[in-house]
Amino acid sequence: MEPKLVTEIIHSPTDRDLRRAAALLCAGGLVAFPTETVYGLGASALDATAAAKIYKAKGRPSDNPLILHLANPSQAALYAEVSFCFEKLASLFMPGPLTVILPKKPLIPDTVTGGLQTVAIRVPVHPMAHQLLTYVAGPVAAPSANRSGRPSCTNASHVIEDMNGRIDMILDGGDCDFGLESTILLPVDDHTVKLLRPGAITVEMLEQNGFSVVLDKAVTQKLGENEQPLAPGMKYRHYAPKAEVILLDGSRERVVTYMEQRADAGTALLLTDEMKSEVLGQKPDVTVLSLGKEGDRLTQAHRLFTLLRTLDEHPEIRRVYAALPATDNIGLALYNRLVKASGYTVLRL
Ligand code: AMP
Ligand code: MG
View (tube, rainbow, N blue to C red):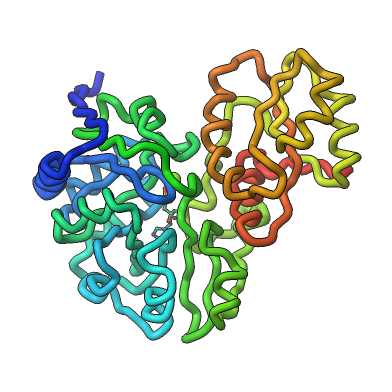
């Protein structure tokens, strides 16, 4: 059996705790910390051995690169070739839930970038993450803190579930604001970006600021056997609960009718509050998980991963039905996570 680490779990960390966490990172340790998107699992990005430990702790495939977290966008030029497009994105959306792919400088080890010549740069706005990165005073490589294949962690108890005994420290900073991972962009030219993963910085926000946005196919569609996504992580089946997830694409009336006809004791329904009251009257024995109000898609995004985790606590649930979300604004991020959770199983009604 592999040796188990003693994981120090710190609830509401003090400034002194954050300095200790930073020292641990600088010494090659692994520390999970909150950000505004999801919890990250950090290691020094200049230390190949430390970064390699992340892949082991997560069970992550070694070709799936890590995102470099910085305290300030001005540090990006130390580790990557910055461009006009990056500077513009940084001035608009950094710090914040945005990751930008840039050509890497040689001091970033291949372990961090999965052998790619590019590196992903992000500057979190969460005050605890910002303070920790300021104390480290260097780049921290941090993927999401879940075990590979599990939904990302949106609170510290998810991290404890997945990482206790596998890493050195967990900083509990409460619930993450957005609850979905960052938007990932690849600059194409000064005013054009390719969207590799949708998140809280939306296509509409980018377009309103003069960018043209090209959607990478992997955002909405299953890739063929020989196709490679631009963000290597998009090819893995993420966010999948053990139960089969089936997405229903049709008018609200058809979706509700279908759920009423098909749902039984082995079924869970992932619904908005409004749909819940319509279906529930007929189906008292069905597990109903509420995403929130219909118009409140930020709350829906915030709850999605917690609900997907909850499903795994109910082995009797074999099948989950959810309505296919609309793809405007933050809806595209919800859509992307749900189609991946379903393995692209969409039923047209
Ligand atoms: P996670 O931190 O778990 O959300 O995963 C990071 C995501 O960023 C994965 O989908 C990676 O494939 C993607 N990523 C990281 N570095 C790069 C890069 N250099 N080029 C393209 N995608 C990247
Ligand atoms: Mg992840």
